[in-house]
Amino acid sequence: MAESGVNPTAAALLGLLHEGPMTGGQLMAAAERRLAPYWSMTRSQVYRELPVLAERGYVRLGKPGPRMSQPYALTASGKRTFSRWLAENPGRDTIRNPIALRMAFGNLHSASQLKGLYASANEYHTEALAQVREQVKNAKRDGETYDASALEFAVAYHRAALSWLKSAPVG
Image (cartoon, rainbow, N blue to C red; front, side, top):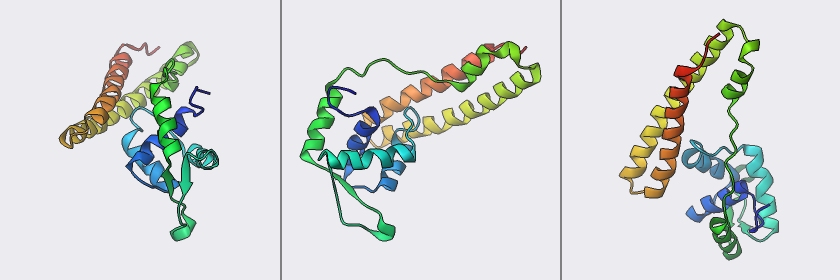
């Protein structure tokens, strides 16, 4: 665990709560909208972290809403913890690419399996690239310079993946 005492998922939730109080579902939607092109979070991670953040005093619970939805608001302690997290060294990237993993065992695939794998990956990265380019355009239009910059990472990632797929051996 980092010096701030929070993991990246918890820190991302604290960062998103700077926008105002949100329920777990709203936080998940905000994470999908803002972070998904370069950072993945699952619903179970969000709902696992929120009670821990509340227990530590980093967020406070609001009044339950419809269907027992529970809003969370960032506390002063949560803001300080998030600021400490921002100042920490982020550490090394973790790369987990399921296509690259399968390619490492490409000699155990049939040529048709590899072609199908690459076609599927190519389709995914092509669609994802188009979507994230649109997000960059919107972020720039809305004056969200830092969001646009983070999203440019996802643009570069999908471009690199597509370039790599063009050179991949198919059997």
